[in-house]
Image (tube, rainbow, N blue to C red; front, side, top):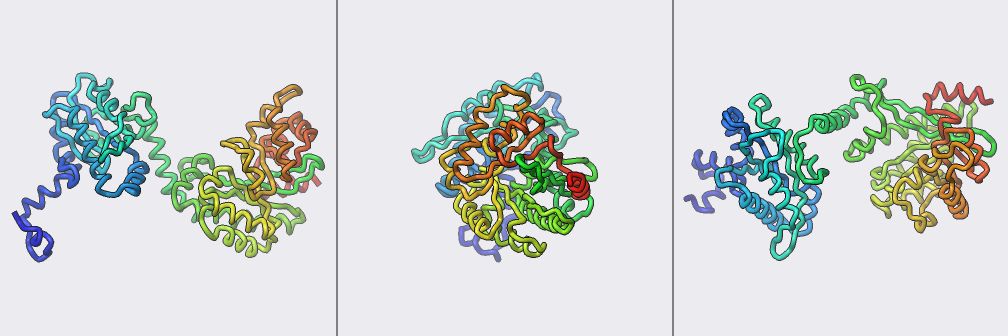
Length: 445
């Protein structure tokens, strides 16, 4: 065997056979790795007996990274080795365990029926519900068990990917197991495609657009502002709801340029509204990610100045989740924007885990009541207990109150009687392109 010094010296040649063996085993568990699984796949798939690929993931990536950060690399590797040992204790000696990624192991099991879970898969899922103890510290696994019937037509790499999708889905299953589901996989692939196509959409001139929904003063009936709402018309997939693609963008670095895209165009459009004689405020939605990044307030004010607007021509909307993401940074930036003259609105109030104790301390001018409180108002006698008290508390704290989701004449008049100052909803106007909004405003004159 070569000495440690020899291995450390790049000038000393290594035995090619030894290198080949090193590349076929995982260095942490010493188990056959993904390369060996791919090499052996055809023999499994072409066997006369029916086989099932079972993929076991010990934890999700976030949990593992937290363990790594808190306890170190050596502890995390001990966790993976202990998981491999537990798995081996549940399987016959004749079954080869492949360590196919940092947290994932694959085994191929002969089965009689490819539509039912093998008994050993259930045993694995149950065994990993208990914590794994490492150096007297119990670590809770969040295991996933995914299953895919083996087929030579599918191939090794695609079989592993499908099994991983199933393992991820299994974390939401009561028994901790899941077969590969094409619909679930299609949703993941669609999400990946949307993220891949979003940069092209921002660069194109015919995909992303802003529609504007009027905000009405419920006491006077006047339109004093609009909310800018993003729309995406994908060239192949058609209309994509912002409720689908914006949360995806928030999980990546794309949310920053996307919000920037919205700010630049919404402010330029508001300049045109004002030049046409419609003095109003444009409301722009900010992601929690935006307000957790230092300097967002400076970027917004720069765009405002570049568009020839005053800060009071802008309103920034944020949700309760923003304060949970990075409370200190968000509060500081919102405070600076208010000092500069930008109105700030707390959006969708009541849709999350609203805590009345913190409302008095948030840096906002407007509280927008979530439409779930407003839409039930269809006729006299409909429940309005919570709505009435939210309006009273908010106004007592000095907020202007805006109701979202006004869809009936009764809701409009009832909210006005309750003292709600502003509202938006389909009863007054749906979101519309800028040109249609100008016609709508002209008609109201």
